[in-house]
Image 1 (spheres, rainbow, N blue to C red):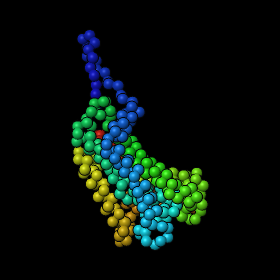
Image 2: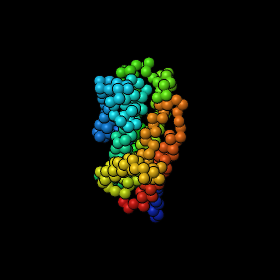
Image 3: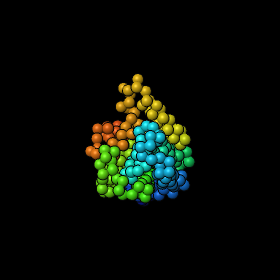
Image 4: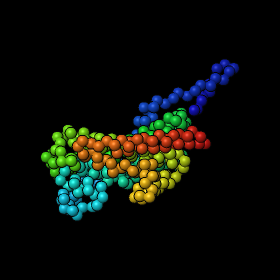
Length: 293
């Protein structure tokens, strides 16, 4: 925190500079983030992806043809060919594998390591802004980028699914036909759940970003960790380790498409992601308050 000095008669009085209001800091951070060309490019890619996948499913696959891709995500994509409800959730499941962690990693890398490498992070501390408030603002910025990407992806996927399949094809994996508001409710649950998972990845990226001045190191570390976690999940000999892997519950998002929704795996995924968020942000705070400069 900076201090200003003023001379009053023979004495010198130190006056503390006024604190910048938190809403003002958040607005400035969000303006800076969403004016970056790479942020706009990423959001554009998330908007194009569901359109491309939806058209591809209509032109290539058909429900039940048996030739679709294998695995949980592949099964969702095959079912989405004739179901407007499944396409948004299938796109969230697909992007949770790589694109959403990449987006969270990029946002976390830019938040601290990127600004530190360009020398602009020091300006925040001269604002004046305490390091705890700085981390809070950066955390909100990362969360905003992730939520914006998920929202764009989901909205475009909903529109694409309705255009390609109509409103008469809203049924769950359990065979229950849903009204449009009920379908939107299930999609909203999927969006919130996926956002928490991606926020956990962003928190890990912030923790790494607080320890380095190289943004690419943050991105490489997060993506490498995601790949390693995915490989470890396939090893039955390491089943004892699976509950500690952040990616363990990513495919549980498909449970929102069942009626009634089985909540065990979804709740476990939220708890795991919450633990990652708390631990990662605690490490980031411990690092940023003790970091010189």
